[in-house]
Length: 454
Length: 172
Image (cartoon, rainbow over all chains, first blue to last red; front, side, top):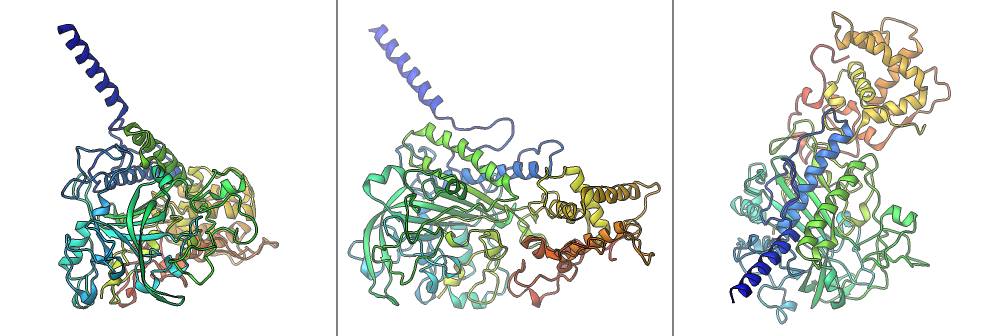
């Protein structure tokens, strides 16, 4: 009997050791920052030592690496399974059961902050449920209504600069949502910036809180993009069964409608104001099947299928990154399918590409170490935009943009039509958001959401 | 443009130091510690493609000699010497210096008189938006502003914060 118990105990120890070694919790070496499987949202980026006698390119590569590590740690923490308080539950692990509920999905949706009549919102208040969705709505269910990321009612139907919607290879419109974390919500609440009336009497400078390294997180905005998926594709996406709402439209004319859909996450854009990023740090992630790169197209190196590109496209509508022809009707399946290509926006900033590739490889190992079937293995960091010239939680006078690196950055699901390298026209998170104001002509600290106040 | 290997870090830094003396801007502004735009490298390579490596090497050598003098002379004196400000008929090398000053201030290449086949051209979109004339004016170019809405209602930040060397050696 004693021998059997000993064998069982030894077997259990051996199995435990195998499981533990298969789940590395850190890839840290020395004191350099590293991607880690932790539920704690990093308050800021951590910087490792620069190589001695480094060239400009080497310095940028090293620091870009630190910011990309910060981005992955943020992605991991934001997509961590939440506990009852909404924060990441340290007793669980991202992707341990393949997919999981996430921390950021419990943030406050902007449509529940800027309420009709300028009513005061609350962090745990009721969700705004459109009439057409009420029959299908169940508590805790999410409602996706935006057909573009631009947070103004008039341009809900298009991406930035009113360029247009994004339609997947099945003819379904991509949907978007914007959520904010508690520190950002609290700042809006405390300064009555949730209403036009409150903004009108606000006399100071809008200054959201900055995150602190090894301390509190700052203001965080999360923009996500979703596509309708079939049950067969569920194991490749982070999914949610949500209510997809389309408000009524006059041109083209269609009534408001709401339906329950299985949606897969295709893009995640995270803006976080931190001490090292007074202009905010902009981390952008995408599903790995979204679109081929410019180089892939030139070399005809394709995957069998993409979310937003058809390798076998022929005839009309094969020109990449073209805005869908009007009329735009998200309530119908479109015959037009967006043909999206990721343009190379890192010319002269090749360090950004090199750094993201290395960090993606590191993160993939960690995520697969948790579970070979983790849906999170199907997401990749495109890059992190950060200011190279900035003060502690404040911009440097004379250089309010902080000379961002890389110079340009786009998420193909959120800025499909403004990819490129032309200043003030092509996608640059910091440059664009620097133009944001409230409903009054007062700068709103790199966020457009305050324009939603009623 | 030639397709030669990019210039070394030391070469770009030396070109930035010379450009700082010629323009009256701070060297740390012309070539910041972290420089994702890298106008120094772009301008160096552009100028070499226009006038040839040997002419650029000769100019850089002249700058190295002036900047290593003992006792040291000021950036203003170095600029005056390279630009041959007292000469009514500046040499080709001094004309190249003038073209480099124009390149930094206006983001464009204005061919020096000796470059008879040269074309006037904007060097790049970044060269346009980051040309020094806007910093000197504490303003911004048409079509691109780094400032937030309503900036015009406030006094601009100081010239120093715009990178201008207002100490010994600036303001020419």
